[in-house]
Image 1: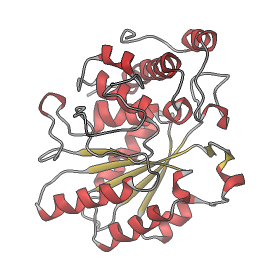
Image 2: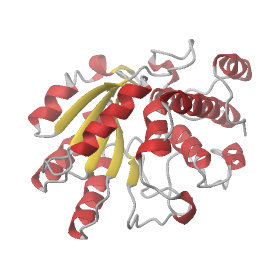
Image 3: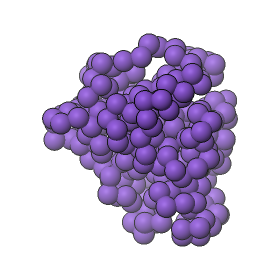
Image 4: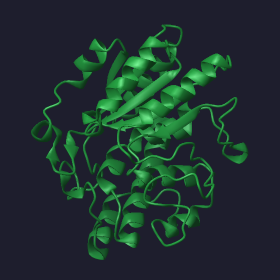
Length: 281
């Protein structure tokens, strides 16, 4: 079992990967990738039952993860590589012509670890609910995890999926929202005024947990509490309170880095602030 300190070291390397991938490609989405790095590191390195060496897209007999906020591939690809789905060196090909590491997750080139193509915001929770229902029907004792963005929750399909999941008693579905309060055009509050997500998910009948998305102990507890709710007949939403661009001072807390690539100098400055723990690609 990995300790919180060990997981934090991995998430530091993941953030280095994120910044370097986006800088090398001169395009991509670092802000939300940085804010979600801690809890996704915990998921992939400690919480989720998965087998990188024997992965199959149907997810039979294993937990499944779907990235609904599909533009956040930098964090996704880093964790897939760092947990053994494909060589770490392949991160050099991010967003390059002909790469398997496209800007949004794609299944057409068979990249291991990608269960569902995503990027049309709002659709991933529906897909995850379908997978969870399938596992229920097959009497599988596994979880389906899905990550949404708080800006993504402006999409009506998120709430349709929320009703569907409750109606079908999908207590094997654990959703996460990266609640960083930012989206491409500004703060979520100023763009849509979507209000208190905790109250909304509770009103939709979901088991709802709020946790600090940068405190590894709190993250691990949130996942443990969510898994313990299996049998309740209700899906779980974990709202991780985070800081967009977390880990690099000039990127943190602003929407400016939602979809902006750092320059070579900015990348070098970010590397000074992030510990290299597993070796850069």
